[in-house]
Amino acid sequence: MYMNFNDLISSPSTTLISILIDGIFMMFVFKKCGLKWWYSFIPGYSEYCKGRCANKETEGRMVAWLELLIFALSGLLMFQTSDITASIALLVSAVAFITMFIIDIKICIGLCEVFDRRKWWAILWLFSGTRLIVAAIWGLSSKFQPNRLATDKQAEVETSGVTADEDAEGLSVNINARTAHTAFQTVTLLKDIHLVIPQGHMVLLLGGSGAGKTTFLNAVTGYEKADASITINDINIYKNYDHVKYNLGFVPQQELMRGNDTVLKTLQDAANIRLPASMSHKDKENRVIEVLETFGLAMLQNNMVEKLSGGQKKRLSIAIEFISDPELFILDEPDSGLDGVVARSLFEKLRDIADEGKIVIVITHTPDRVVDLFDDVIVLAKDSTRTGRLAFYGPVNAAKNFFARGTMEAVLRTINQKEEGGEGRADEFVAMYSHVARLMDEGKTCEEATKEVIFEKSKGATA
Image 1 (tube, rainbow, N blue to C red):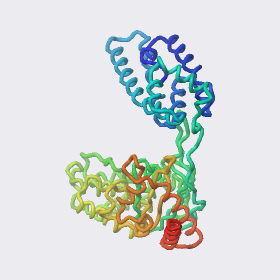
Image 2 (spheres, rainbow, N blue to C red; image 1 turned 60 degrees about the horizontal axis):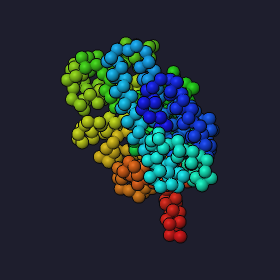
Image 3 (cartoon, helix red, strand yellow; image 1 turned 45 degrees about the horizontal axis):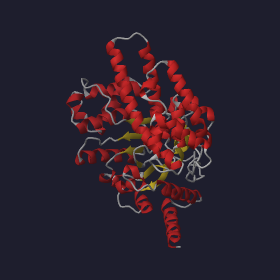
Image 4 (cartoon, rainbow, N blue to C red; image 1 turned 180 degrees about the vertical axis):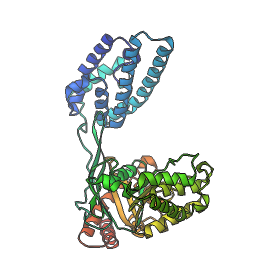
């Protein structure tokens, strides 16, 4: 944070002079850290680069946005505004400045660590009176050298090098990468996820916060396309989305239903939207009746949605998506807010749907109370570069053996980052599963490949 609060809310000419002076001194530090020297003269972006130099890229990005917000508010104050507007702008600017200062403490400490200096130097970096002197010393003196460059990348975890069979019966997923663009960089959200889910399988999707579960599902359904090839029963979802979309059922965590409609009216509307226009009215009505009976809602068909219990609303949400008889059925926390007995009953109904030959993928934050109903588990984890990776895919018991844990919650703790209360072993298991995937590609079953990799790991540990 190069300027103080008065600089940031002052006139444009004063602000530009401050940027110029700070940039002259900081450009030498940026150059030492492997960045372009002229980055130091770009408002906002210079703060992001400072974060990169300190190995605090996320914090640098936050400070950059806050600085740009303050610049925008200072521009607003230049115009004739009401006293109330001016007061609000000043208050927001003050809060943003305090937040910047707090975050910048971490960045300045990071700079000390990168340059192998004691943390008390961070105090000098924080204040405008001493910052320019410190920047000049660190930037010009040969005694001050960074132990890493801002352009250094963390070592990436190995990739499997395999590809799922696109002609396999069921759902074939080959996600090479899913990226997103921000103002300052391109972020890889998912990478190297290759798997086949057979028809009739019910699969648990497991992963900690930020591991990419929702991003994975959006990529699979084509809602947010990735660098990927997704096929269901040999039909490419991306290339034939208009044809396939009604064959994909997605039940979000939130219930998107009108409370003043009856259960019957809700399903009739869903049938009119999701079933083919060429389908006769009688056939649509028969499908509605069939779904009402399937989910135990026939006796409630004339009840208002707002009068239903939590479990009944969940069943209706699922029935809405099931009306089109999709081959792939995805549910995001369908048991949210339900007690154990009601949740168990709901998952047993999903098990019945899978047994009819459907593919069912479920996210739940309480997996162990229903884990016996699942065939397989997909475990996603954030690797050291914060990219969502495949840490395991296979039968539930094989997953327990692979992670040497007796519960799915314990598996999550194993792969979660340490700052999230986990053991921080995601990279280890992503690399191990890459080996498992290669062995399965050679013809071994998941159980056989898992045992072999675990045995090899134990030999290495003994050696």
